Image (cartoon, rainbow, N blue to C red; front, side, top):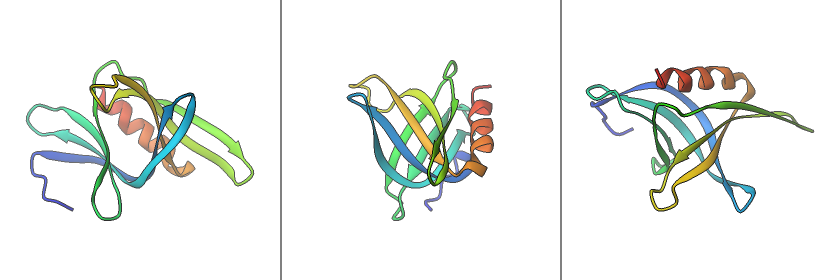
Length: 118
């Protein structure tokens, strides 16, 4: 991992990033999701990097964001997500995203995301 001295890692978990496009959920990259908080200005962001360290997802967290737990039942068992609105691309504006994590990681990720809003 690259040396990042200006931000502290608040949480780390494997995740898949999904985005609503034309009324359907489109899967984007999977990798290691990290929640960062800047040590000076306290700004927070969500970053997912793939296996070779390339950034797949990078979104700032701002006050007023809502993080919703979503649990979908499937034949393989529950699929668990955190759903939220955010701006990834300024040209596109507000979009809907879901981060898929293992069921036993859902509560902790949700709690950490909520904690970033404080």
